[in-house]
Length: 318
Image 1 (spheres, rainbow, N blue to C red):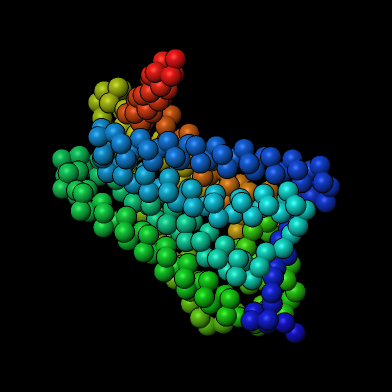
Image 2: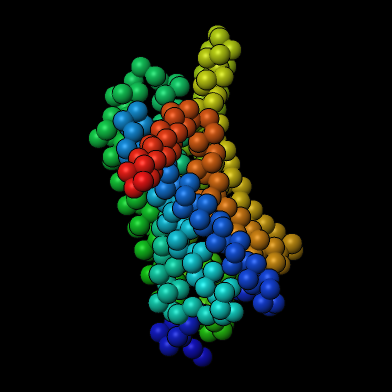
């Protein structure tokens, strides 16, 4: 009966047994990861370099891009390596690190989305107090609280999970190491510590969800009271990207974890895991840049500046 201390490696779920399809998955993941790196990297550069984007909304957007990059860099490289070389193994230490960092970044992202909802609530419902409630110090404290809460949540869950004895084999029904799938390999029933951590995390997630719903109810009520159609359109346009990202995040995660066992299958679980772990970090930059005209202008300036610099270098060389 192997336990967590004697197990050397885990087996991840392969996307396919055929080499051609494995190679296709490699190129697909490569394209997705490059798109995510490019999109989030551009947002990070634009927010950091453009003075017009030094606002609370863009400050939190910068942190959200960091978590998206973290999620992609945690799960995709190992999956690409396994698809390219036709392997399915991951070391025990690598699995623990992957589980920790994925839970860390995904937790921070959800907390940041909650804070960004508060930002939109204050901007629309209490615009006169926006500078007071969301000053630079308050934004820094909220961002630090999101990162610290995510770190503590990931640390407690990962430490507890990898301290349990594992005797149900070492095959994970997932293409990356995730705590719920590792717990299925445990010998014992749920411990008091595990149940306590699960209850606390569930209460925290539910509280954030209720806060988001309540905030958007107040936002929609305030927007509908705006007399001019142009004002209502402008207010809605500042909320739609965040609402789209939150909906994508919550719907994918909820269906993946709360779907009925009767419709569960390895292929469906694999597709859902890609949807909630890989797709949102790739689409978030696109969603946030569609209606953010200041961000579009900053990206346009960066592109023009790069082209001008390249042209100058070319003419200098000639």
